[in-house]
Image (cartoon, rainbow, N blue to C red; front, side):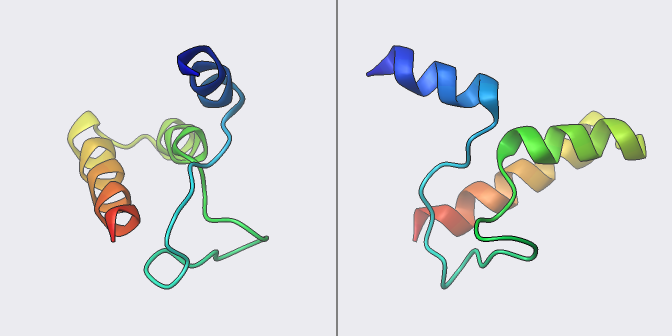
Length: 63
């Protein structure tokens, strides 16, 4: 199971989420963690900004 999860992370597949709290903006699923990291790199975010964004998204998915 962990191997499958790790492969999913490398491919950038989004984890299951509560679509009421984390609705998709574009497409059928919210951005994956990999999408967020790519955006951060493209836009030159600081590590603190990236960490905050990932934590915010993780909290939305907990509900």
